[in-house]
Amino acid sequence: MSTNKNKQKALASSSQNPNKGPTTKKPSPFAFANTECKLNLPVTEEQLFETLKGYINGIAFRQETNFLEVTLKEPTRTKTLLTEGITIEDKLIIPLPPKEVAPRTLRIKLANVPLHVPRKKLEADITNHWAQFTSVKTLAPYTYKGTEILTRRWDLIVQIPPEDNALKAPVTWEYEGTTVLANWRGAPPSCLSCKSAGHFSNICPTFPPKKTMAETLKKSIDSSTNKTPKF
Image (tube, rainbow, N blue to C red; front, side, top):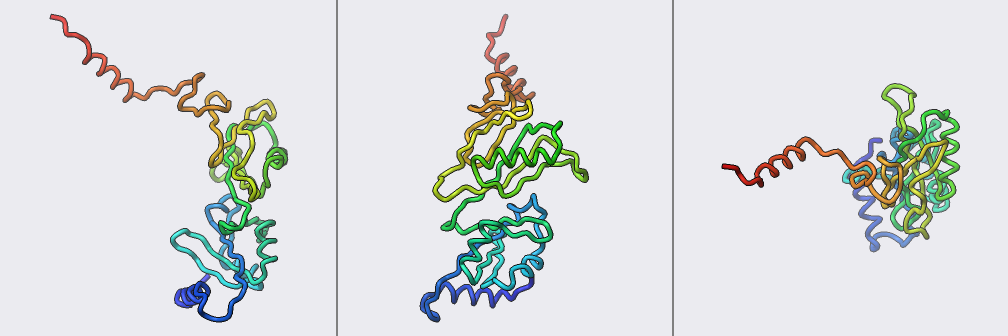
């Protein structure tokens, strides 16, 4: 949305300076990150503004982080939106709270999801499984470009409560005869090669990574260099 940058700067500086104006309770700010909403086809800023304009206290786009920061007049409204999200034209938008306000948002990447299960059942089963460990906000599969054809990869957006330092959940899941693997920031190691937990694919003891041509050539050169010449 088009806004006057100078007015934004003036409003920002006046809200940050405690010597200007009467002391008032500062609204709880929250941000919308396009990177976190990729799965949901994020709406335009104009649509977002039209939905929230009756509640907005201030709004600014932070170019350095690509975040749209929004503050609301009522703290209770802020809490509700942070908890439930915002649905605009059937698209769920997940607001990201400031650091001092939890819960934290995580993206979970799933691999080796079975292909023989209908999409609706996959959505329900994945949601129910992860609801045991965290609050699932949204999920979506990776599909082949321009089609609805599924791949074995899915992503979830989840929120963990403030009292938890990290997501506590298994990184493997036996589902429909397949071992599904999960990965997120700070997750324990898992291996896509042998479909198990405890190590990464690059050090898999069952299926060690293949050596590259460069490594093979280097080993061959080193081996021939170290040989004692025959006369």
